[in-house]
Image 1 (cartoon, rainbow, N blue to C red):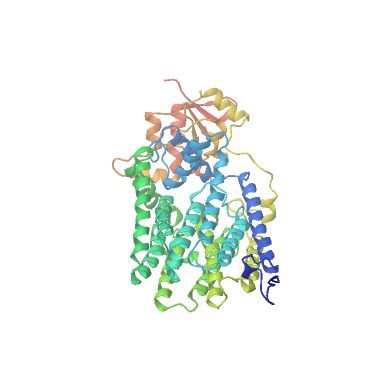
Image 2: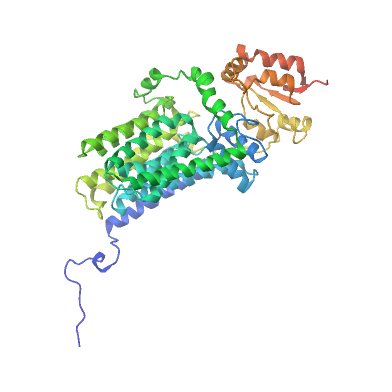
Length: 527
C-alpha cells in the first residue's frame, strides 16, 4: 500500500493551485470592500444632493431633444454635445419622471474608468492593477460630493473618459508595454468622446495622444496605432449619425466654438496669463482643487520618470503637459473636475509602477504597495476636509450631513402653480435671467432657441456670425412667449441691472404686463 504524499516543508497552498489567502490577502480584501462601500455611499448621497444651474440646462436640453428639438438650433447652448447625448439617452430609456436619476451615469462611468485601470497593460500584476484602481476609487469617493462629481456635467464625464484613454493606450506606451488592439480601439473612441465634451479639451487631449503615438511609431508598433485610428473613426461615425438627426454641425461650430471664443472668453479673462497664474498653489476655497490635482500630478510624474529612457521621459512630459492643458481656461472648483479625476488615476498607476521598477515581484505587490495605497486613500480623504464644497462653499461635514433633496420635479408653490394656470401645457415660458431648474418646477418648456439671457448673449447679438442670429430682444418682437418669469432678486450678481439687460426690460414694459399678486410674472398683452 502506497503511503500518502505529504506536502514538503515550506510548500504553500499557492503551489497546489489554491489562492494565497493569508494576512496580506485578507487586508487587501478589506481594503477593497472599504473603498467600494465608501464609493457606493457617496454615490447614493450624490443622487439626492443639490443641483447647480449647469446640470439643469443639460437635463433640460436632453428633454428638449427627446421632444423633437435640435441641439444648437431649437435649443441653443454653448456646451459640447456629449452631455446632452447622455441626458437624452436617459430620457429615452427611463422617461422624465425622475430626471435626477440621470446622475447614475456618473457612477457607471467612474466604474468603467476603474475597470480600465484594472485591465491596463501598463501593470503586469493583477494585484497592482487592483491597488491602482482602488486608489482611484478611494480618491473619487473622498471628493464625489465636495467637487460635484455627481452632477450631470461634462467636466466629470471628460475626466472619466481621459482615464480610459490613459489606462488603455497612453500609459502602456509610456512604459514600453504594448497595448493590444481592442483597448487601443476603445481609447480612440474615448478621444472622440472627450472632444465631444468640450472643444477646449482638444489641445490637451491631442498632446496626450501624440505622446503615445510618437513612442509606438518609434517601436514600429503600427498595429496598436491602426486600432486606435479605427476607434477614432468609429467615434466620428457615431457622432456624425447623431448630428444628422439631433443637431446641426454649422450651429455647433458657431454656438459651441466661435461663440465661446468671441463672446464668452473675455468674461473669464481667458489667455496665457490667466492660465499661468492658475498654476500657483492656493489652499483656500475652490482654488484648493486644482492645487491638489497639480500636487498629485507632480508626484506621479516623478514616479513615472524614475529610471525611464530619455525618449520615454520626453513623451511622458509631453503627455503631462496635455493633462495640465485640459484646464486651459484656468477654471477652479468643479469646473476643473476632469484634472482632479485624472490625477487620482495617475497617482494609482504611478505608485504601482514605481514599486514594479523597484523590483517588487508582479504577483506580490502587498509588501509595501498595499500600505502605501491605504495611506494614499486616507490622505485623500483627510485632504477633503480641508476643502470647501464646490459650488456651495460648505465643509466636508456640512456636505455629508445635508438632507436628501428631490430635484427637477414640478412643485406646488404659489408661483409655479400660477404659471401652470396661466400657460397651458405645451406652451412655452421664458425664465430670466438664468434659472433652468424653473422650467422643471413649473413643468413648462422654454421657447424656441432661448432659455436664458446673459451678458455674452448680448455681446454676440451685436456682431453675430452671418446666417446664425441669436438675439433675444429681436426674437421677443417676432415671436414672444405667452409668459416671462423675471426674477432679478434671485440673481446674486445683479445681471439684470446692467446695461445689457435694458432691451429686455423695454420688451417687458411694452409687450407684457405684470400679474397681480405675482410681480415676477409678466403675461403677453393682448394684440
